[in-house]
Amino acid sequence: MDNSYLESLEALMTTDEAAGGGENGGIWVVTQATADGLTTWSGKLVAAARMLADQLGAYVQVLLLGSEDETLANALLAAGADGVHMTTTIIPAFTAMADFVTAREVEVLLFADTPVLRQYAAALAGELDKPFLSGCTGLEIDVETSGLLVQRPVMDNRINEMVAMGEGVKPQIVALFPEPLPEPFDDPYRTGDVETVDLPAETPWPWVAGESVEEPLQPPRLQDARIVVAGGRGMAAAGWPLLESLASALGGVVAGSRGAVDEGLIGEERMVDLMGQRIVPDLYIACGISGQMQHNAAIENARMVVAINHNPKAPIFKVADVGLVGDVAEIIPALINAIRDQKAL
Image (cartoon, rainbow, N blue to C red; front, side):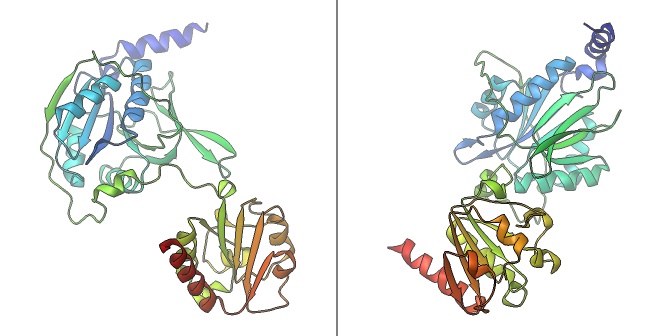
């Protein structure tokens, strides 16, 4: 084994700063309580922090938002926390949170990558003037620098890259997808310090309802979607929200053609095209898409293709299983109403 690796690890484990100093320093996890207890991802985040801390000989502290229930605190201790700090505040004020983090000399601050916490973590990083990364799927420690190495999927999840957060930066703030992480190995005999803390709420904050806590934790992959509703340049006049409403009614995801990207209606990461993404959904609905060769080739393996276009000679109809000729602004609302009526039966 490389002696330099052992020397670096030993230095990290014997440094008071890396060891966390009890409640100060170390790795902190921000988690939330729901009406039914802890979020489903709380234990996973704590377990990930525990693995990271064990590499450094550091402590794991948890800030539990939205509850002062010691039963929940004990569950977090069992998952690997050394201490739990509880507040009934759901969304702490940024300035108060920044003071809290600074006073405790937090080294790594982990959030779950939910829509609410991702935005909160980004705003907090701005308040602290510290780096922030979201969309992360794994964490490692660079033993030479004590810096955090963060794994992120790129190229539409085809490969992963490792990003260094920076040497000597504190805190290093990360929003992590819990889904790929292993389940915690709960130890009911673990003990630790539990305290309540006073953190004033951030107001106004639009996402404080309990249901927003459990929003999806994985970015939707276009290639994995069973139902895709895609729009083309023709949706610019009809209104893109119509397309989103149809996708929502069907439980599908939204995509677009190259024309939609050119119009600024959707980003390139959602483009269905040979230069974008080739997909194989069970149902593909093309709305206002003329059907150029690059687009049609990208959907050739779709199980069923439904095309809506005002031009009966549009190339999209050559590959469609069902063709609807007419104005998308009239046909899409009719489809949405029909779907809702069917669900109501």
